[in-house]
Image (cartoon, rainbow, N blue to C red):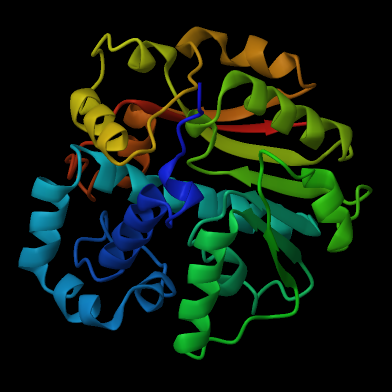
Amino acid sequence: MKKKSKRIDSKTSRTAEMTCVTRAASFFEKNPCYKSDDFIAPKLLPVFMLPLIKMSIIRYFYRNVISPKGIYEYVIARTKYIDSIYIESLENGFQQVVIFGAGFDSRGLRFVAEYPKTTVFELDVPITQNAKIAQLQKRRISISDNINFIPIDFNKESVIEKLDQFGFNKNRRTLFLLEGLLMYLDSSSVNTTLNIIRDNTINGSEIVFDFVYASVLNKEHRYYGEKDISKYVSTAGEGWTFGIQEEEIELFLEEYSLKVKEMKNSIDLENLYFRNDVGELQGRINGTHCIVRAAF
């Protein structure tokens, strides 16, 4: 039987595009709970979109009509949370950052002025990565020499061989980011990816990833916004294929010599980022995801 091709084999990732649009829109939000600091994201969008996302009514429509319930809020919270880990890691002497499935991520650009000696490796499929680079060049955004764009076919090419070609040093403390990635892989690919990371880094390195609960794949509908997001990723041609049982994450990570440092579910993220000065909840976060920070 011929294997069904995925959208990202021939077009830019729709979910990566949506993440970029959300980050760009959130940059123009007035409510501090919704506002992000990603000043690069608006520059990665087509020019015609900028006047639109600057309009509050358009952002309201995007957040409440186009986006699955709570996903706009989730992407904002995830961005802020991983930004905080990124900064903390670099402050603590991490010399390398490896971003798997980087999409339109902008951290290497946003933080280069403060951390010019940190080497960033962005791995992604060529079509999405080329679209990002083309947009940066079109907007005349300078790309620092410390950022390495690595085109890769994850199904056919060796991650570590690609990293080695671009100067990755296995003996340096490294932050590995797998944001919005694992849920799109099969279990074998997840196992291969985590084994590669474990076998090519040193103690003290860290990994940050988000995952969806296994019950979501089973369509048990336990969480806020679950039906909406499941339908969206399916119709986008990028359906989820991997999940972890909520109570089994520590056992899962032990297989890869990893120990959990922090774990944030939707309630944790709401309390961190979506409560105002008097503690009132400003927005609900889609409950299907959890973010993990773990150390080797």
